[in-house]
Length: 254
Ligand SMILES: NC(=O)c1ccc[n+]([C@@H]2O[C@H](COP(=O)([O-])OP(=O)(O)OC[C@H]3O[C@@H](n4cnc5c(N)ncnc54)[C@H](OP(=O)(O)O)[C@@H]3O)[C@@H](O)[C@H]2O)c1
View 1 (cartoon, rainbow, N blue to C red):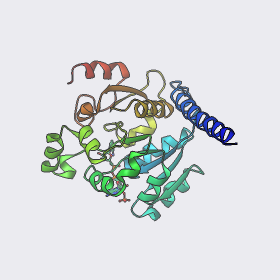
View 2: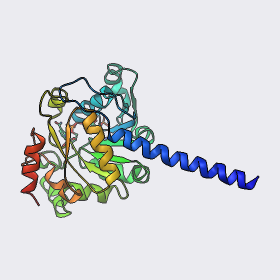
View 3: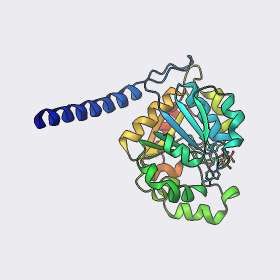
View 4: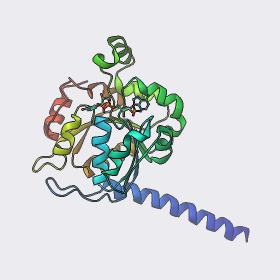
């Protein structure tokens, strides 16, 4: 009896592990055809958008078009009613805590100054997610020169996010492509628009790459989170580049 029980438990664990691996592989190998209709997500994910302003709502909209479930969040979720009403059944609105609980993937599209507070409130939950996609930037005009200097003194936005969200599997992406351009650029015909990314965790990077392809862009890994300092507006990688151009630019950076 005990032997059977142990065998069953072993089999269940094996199947669970195999299903997880197959899920990652299926997600990572999702189809991407430039200029074509949005391909369906091979494995739909639950994505939490922390920050549903200009960038968060534009990016979340693309995740929905790719077939993922998205919870947009706000400190006042009533504000998101019309956004989610227009996006169909895959969209919902919630508080930040509800979104963190919901998401397998969490995207941060907030003023960079908010990340510390988010880390303090939700750090351990964020550490359990397969990916925290950090879209946020320290910006002097908004956050102050002193704040930006402090981030740079810590090694820049990539290392700083990792420090503020200890244990989270962070990948920086979409930091310097304008919100108003995302919808137009997604699935562009011909050469896709490249999205420079930086991260340290291979599984999180694979998940980010798959998501980026599914929403119609081509990810270009430029290095670990230490290179995340180059993924901010106003740097050579910022703006709209082909993947080949991004690789050329990235080769000149350290
Ligand atoms: N706009 C762009 O084109 C663009 C492009 C690339 C990257 N980014 C980066 O993306 C981030 C967001 O930019 P945005 O232009 O989308 O700003 P935005 O339109 O002002 O939206 C900011 C969002 O952050 C949320 N937020 C603010 N403080 C928060 C906190 N303490 N906890 C939880 N949520 C909080 C706000 O939600 P509530 O106030 O409703 O709670 C709001 O949804 C910035 O770091 C920016 O540098 C922007």
